[in-house]
Image (tube, rainbow, N blue to C red; front, side, top):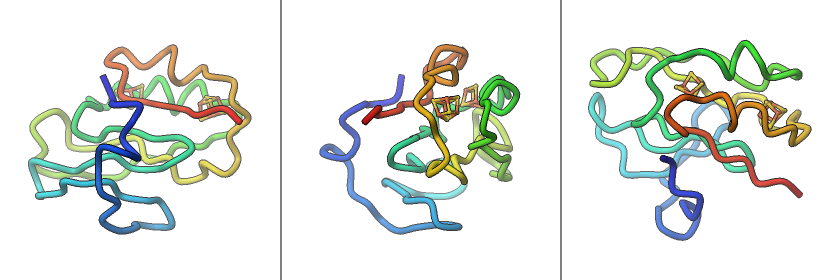
Length: 103
Ligand code: SF4
Ligand code: F3S
């Protein structure tokens, strides 16, 4: 499961499309955690898609990660600012790749 203390335990190494990137990032095998309020561990995500289908405000969008061992696309929390803290995505992700910090 995603480390809910990633903001302490990981280093913020940059930003992609306005979404924070938390390392380590060593493409293609290591893609890090993306997002802050809504965070997705790209190294755990296996492209199930439930988060994209169920999020009522369409926070997520697919990004391609060719060559990643788990899956070649990931759910990027591109519109995390829109999140209404319903926690549905956290509940439906089969591999607990998502962390949402309400408040
Ligand atoms: Fe979307 Fe709810 Fe997840 Fe926020 S907590 S990203 S609103 S499904
Ligand atoms: Fe990935 Fe979980 Fe969504 S596996 S696509 S973060 S439901």
